[in-house]
Image (tube, rainbow over all chains, first blue to last red; front, side):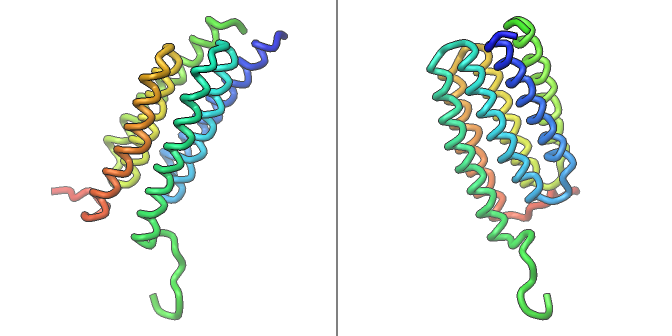
Length: 97
Length: 87
């Protein structure tokens, strides 16, 4: 097996694991489950983008993965801020809710 | 595995993911869940542009889809209820 074939199989496996996180995103009962699934799927897909850039040997494609990693961080940050403001998933402090 | 087979497999996975996340973004009743599903839709659409050799379009789609629309929709939903009101 050549090096390129190995990178191709790695990219296919990364995309397949992204599809597995997609199942958690569709079936997740709470919103924090879905937010974590979104973050995990973005990281996995950024890795797949870097592998595609290596396979096609074009350095421009690495920049897309870089930009997407930074921007998905901002999106996850906004979702987390919203969840903190709405107090989703925070345990009650004190005795009575 | 050669490049043609890789391209074919990526196209199948991307198409299935686009279909599933688009249906989820429409059907989910919780609005924040729908926004998250739309962020994933934008991610997979950006991957499709990327695979079709258009990295600049992919960067624009990433900026608009991941950063701007998610933040804007969440800022709008913050002022409303987060469940869809069924008449």
